[in-house]
Image (cartoon, rainbow, N blue to C red; front, side, top):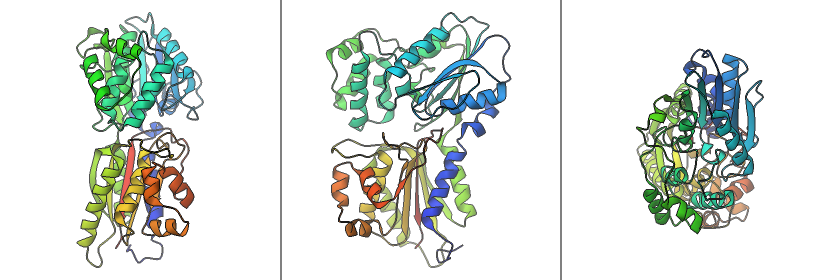
Length: 424
């Protein structure tokens, strides 16, 4: 295949690479290999996250009907025979999540050594598992969470604050189940795939302190009511890594961004493309990473020779957006908008950036695609790309162009997927 082939369509291929990345992270494909034989005695299945309902469905496909409770995002529920699926809000928590979390903790109370808990954790659990620290109201927790999302702080630092304002994160969910044995199966949506950061680590101990959480909030300009400050000044419930209550809990990552990138790379190579991996754990401000990737793409384009196969640059991780304007956007769409501006219509360069959970920011949009004609089409519509970026209005921008990627609920979540294709 060459770039001149009449059947070659870069945008169609980029979408196919993304679809493949999502498919291999589907819990119905990924979970069974990590599931033991169903233990004898009482088995309780719990979970939270955007992929948790699909994970529960996969568990029952292997084990049959189970007792349990799983919390997922609105629109992400699956039909299960025994496990109750509750839908709640993401990315800002709501009362449905708080009520379901309280019921989950009740379900874990008074379990014995002979009981077994299977925990299904995926990205989104930070918002869906809601049990504010003593003295903090749900409304106050919502306000802090919204401020975190708009701050531009990396996910790891966000989760430090979330853990110390919770009665369930930072190992506290596993501690609540002790002395029962627990296996936590996780789908990673965090750079580095550290279980302590997936869903704010509800089954993983954490060595951070409340003082560190306060320092993080100050660094990123997070406004906090006095009750939140008092909670952070008091005794945190976060469980230290060596705590005996974690001794019977095993944490296992069953799907991660690297696996999805590898699958997309294999597909691209099968289509006759050369592939270069830029990393599966990239972080930072979306527009800054876009500028760096534009420089890399232009440098690689300048070295290309006639007859070279299309080159695909793949990357994952989790970029952030510092909310400066009043527009509608998400980190993947903002990355695409900033990339289009940085490329300035360079011939033969196309790109896609999407969140594998199908939700970029808070919108029901996975992300966007761009091509060499993106800016020209914008001008023809009388739109201003730079103004859209200044307003953080990437979703509005690509919506007007018809270049959004809308998947609906993907039922999994292995973070951002980015692909740049250089054809000329």
